[in-house]
Length: 218
Image (cartoon, rainbow, N blue to C red; front, side, top):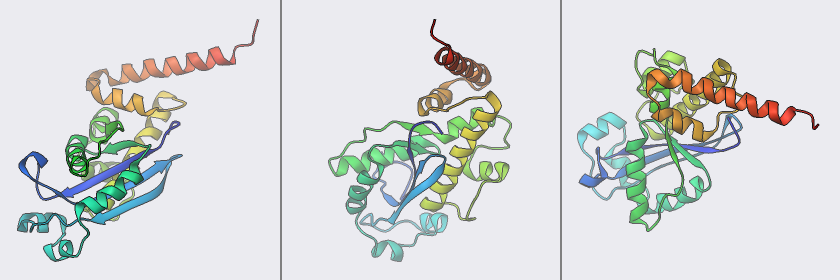
């Protein structure tokens, strides 16, 4: 994976935008290190108001389940410690990043970690996939799944398997010794048609560095 760890996270929410007053109702996250899932974090969160029937049906999270859940602030304080010191990954990361930053602001905290988007990376690693939603990629690559979608921990685990699978694919296809987190962030911003050349150049640079390191002293 490269010499780093990452927390892959997913939120279920009351709606689409924290700017419109929407809040989180569930968090799921997994810590990946050394090409495997090392730890997990999951909790429902009480948003302090009922959620719509659509959200109940979409997520399977009922108002009765949320009524006994801990307050959002309590859970987020714990999650701050779980994610500390790790990079962050999410599928369609802009969505989760906005909610994370909004909830952190409510408890006078601030995110310091970088984010990477597995959706944008997947569009470049798997350009011919029939779709790039998490569910479509799980089916396309036959990734491990509990069969549950739109519950935070299940989605976070599937995203983690996708992330690790893409790293393995890049190592194999482009003979990369390592796939640094920064490389995946850069890849997400490269035009899709330019991605192969970008990766070939990075691989050549890696091998050049290896050759320089291995050269005997004169």
